[in-house]
Length: 318
Image (cartoon, rainbow, N blue to C red; front, side):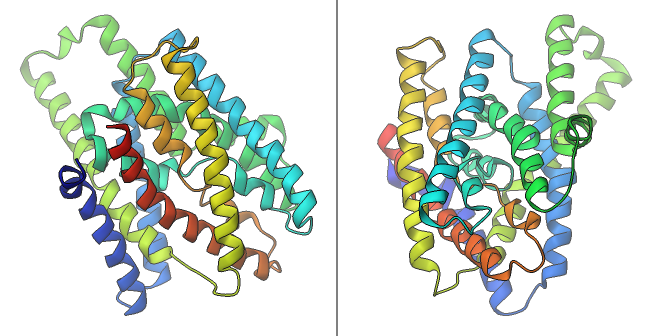
């Protein structure tokens, strides 16, 4: 099974290494990487998400799963606050390292490499609850610690104006319309040719996401030797906690009220083993250099652990 996995997963790992080499040998600079990230966040990732959610059939069980994951993310934030008060209360962003998952800039690429495009709607269904948590809870709280005041109305407007959330909403709506109408209007003639061409263009752009993500993640790896031990301890603690949560949700799917197929269980594990959202350092005050270095080191260490753990879990679950 592991040998069968390598041809799918190894290219992503090699591209990640390539991104790191680009940084070491100054082949690309930080500004270029930021521009590539902008392309990912505003174009390629929304295309990938649109296709995934277009094919997703929303069910009561799927909505219950989203609610459970949203609630677990909130619980993780609460636990993170308790732990941070006991360990290092001065680190204002430490609680946020315990909640949320970097699905957009890593999770979809990993899942796609392991399970293929045809299974992407499953991961989309699993990701929905935490996406709403990030936009509605995590980002407003991060803005608050950075000194910004954001009202509920602004939070909602910022969320629905995001290309990521817009693509999810568009995919869900248009996918539902297509299933309801049977799409017979697009079955022939020039209109069919146009829609099919548009669909293939979106697919092509969406398929650019995994390689671009791998290169940018590799380039962004940043490990401070003085902080690496604390980062490893924090990452392992989070992984242990999230493994227990993943097992709980898997049990709810297999034996509890969330009556979904077993195909959802690997997606649950992929999500819960991902690192915290990469957006966290962006909300730190300008003078918080030491904390930014710690967070960047933690995100880098957790990313490396996730990249090696997720395929192993996939082999175990298979």
